[in-house]
Length: 119
Image 1 (tube, rainbow, N blue to C red):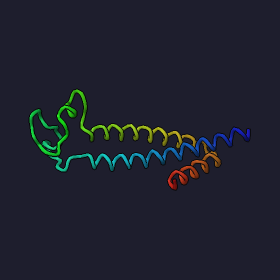
Image 2: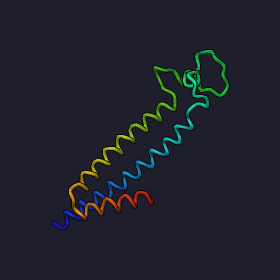
Image 3: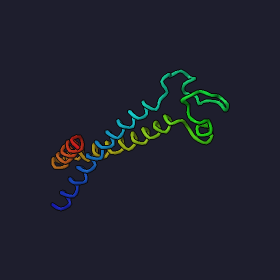
């Protein structure tokens, strides 16, 4: 039916916009993760300070203890991983819809990607 086709095209358009939004969110999260990394990438820079160390500029040892909490860059990496999973799932859903070889669905995916990138 025509209403079903219009609804399908709109859903694919929105999925494509969401795919582009997730892609941009992943890039923003990557930038924040890189800013959260220590200046030195040596093993000493990635480990957290021990109790009683007096390194200026380091986080509080009680907030950075391994069993309770992880370093900030670790949580950014977890966020990036989740964004990646969502991006892959959305990408495969849009690809599956395009593989129906319906011109309207294909145009919905193209317009959605264009709008998502533009926004």
